[in-house]
Length: 271
Length: 271
DNA sequence: CAAAGTCCTGAATCATATG
DNA sequence: ACATATGATTCAGGACTTT
Image 1 (cartoon, chains in turn green, yellow, cyan, orange):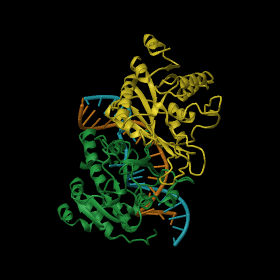
Image 2: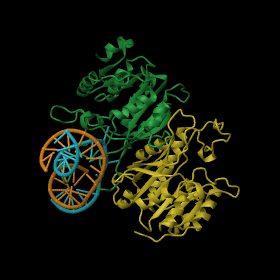
Image 3: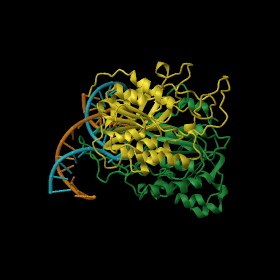
């Protein structure tokens, strides 16, 4: 199913993964369809070309060096992000919310773009990793966090979903604060190919998406992920009784996501 | 002492608080003088005109609604921030570092400005407050964090100070991560006028500045705070055996800072 | 079978010296 | 400017192996 097919049948949008460029596909979709969007763009890491090798075990660190993370400049990156966020804004229902994720490399580009486009930020949420990779050379602090920005599509938006009981459950404190302590994705959850290599370099943990979806959507709500990767958003949405639409440009990722989501066993819905 | 006087005698710059517009004063200073800059600009909170009132308590919430936090638009705010950061970049030594602080309201404006001006981010540091004010409306998460950005003045900068022993001491984990758990400023540390009102609405805790200064400067280093408020940076610098230059446009704040710093008892220097 | 020990790896803008 | 070699040392989680 491609974007053209989809545009011809917009009413059937549910529990689908589309293989194609996210901007093109989004432009073919009708407006105001999404209750929630998970926006996980490339981080534009600008890593050094040389590989980092561990001294003790001589294994190399697999830094992110993928075509989709290469941009000529911040200006090019900004253009890409803003084009995407404009389309997302059109696709969001008036009461819909967006979650963006990033690190210091890119999150300020995303945050400023959101504000410039008229989105209204509700929270920044700190994903505080329990098992971040240490900084061996000890020339700066170990980066143990990623930042999520939660926003509505404009300042006057009303009626968005916020599950305050869940919010409290997720918090490290008695009150529902914006810091979430969670491990990174590893073990059996991490998708690997037949040779044991990870399918996607930056697969998100399901626990993170579970918090996002439980906090800000209701059962039956419609979740969109325009850069779906290996489909964590779709897998969690399916498990929690939410509908989803994923878009992914990389055929390998899309195929892995499709296979993964087919295997999901839905949990009993607790509204 | 004003900016003109200062510019005429640039070599005497140490342990001084200057009352004046930070841009004007900075423009009168010689370049490459600062080992460390603490940059704590207005947060551009965009609070509603009417004061928020707690639904269960009869007291008004003490939002920040000061002349110095009023900007017409993001564009005006950005211009102000970028003008300041350009001057700071000139004032930083090649090995100097800058610490910027903010919340989601403004930190992305600051972060994007840093990157656009060629600064190179070393870390974002999450100040995770132990005693944040709970969110009484329960329509979003309680904001328990502020974000610090630590950066060098350009990508190739070398030789900046990083005390890895201190870094580990500050961390919640065994490794030196970028999340710092600290209470907000309160109690005797909080400066109050004769009528018991707080002198400054957003006085930073000394413990936060102590971490910044110990982590990224050596005894005798020169610390600049161009928007010094009531002088937390200067007080901590003085206590820890670092030199300082503070700039503050508000006469009340500047006077309070001067009085405060005069009372500081230096601690024995441990290099 | 349980417990203990080994090995690998994770969105990383990680140094310095020499040619 | 780039490429290459060298050097010095972090932890948590999970998979796997050994006791």
